[in-house]
Amino acid sequence: MSHEHGHGDAHRGEEAPSVHRHRKGAPRRIPTWVVTVSDTRTLETDSGGALVASLLEEAGHPVPERRIVSDDVEAIQATLREGLVAPDVGAVILTGGTGVAPRDVTPEAVTPLLERVIPGFGELFRMLSYEEIGAAALLSRALAGQAGGRVVFALPGSRGAIRTAMEKLVIPEMGHLVGESTKA
Image (cartoon, rainbow, N blue to C red; front, side, top):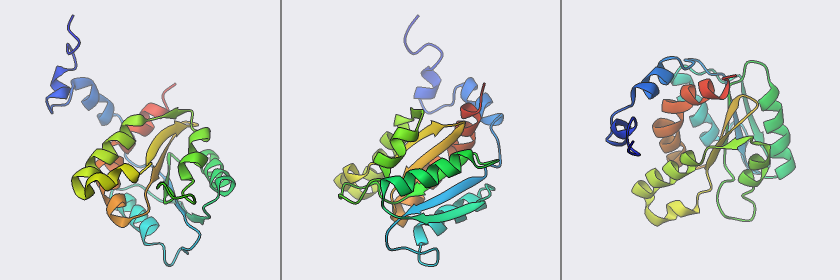
């Protein structure tokens, strides 16, 4: 049996029947917490978090909670832990703090709380970013994972990066990811 048997169609740009079946059964409405990691933003000045919330709501996903948290590992972890146990929440999206500057600690805060990292998210995000901004895409440490039956995304804070991640990756696959995360 060849390596491509059963998956070859998906590699040529066509969806395999199993992918289509999984997406068809995925939840359509995913209540999502939006958390902006910043020492300087307020809810009124947080255009990145507002964009995440707006894109989610346009796609039919409610945003029951939107917060600002400081660039501090413990503060980020406390907020993420709260989101991971909040009733009826399917996803938590953090924005900001994913670069390489010393204050960018979102990946260090998020990763220990994940049960599984989804490497393809960061890989694809950086590939898409490379198409838009060139080699500077390598400065992003955006990531995604699963914890407690929920999906967690850590996105950069720039509006362009948020739009790319949300429109090309998060919104198209969030239902599928949440559906897979809640399987017994």
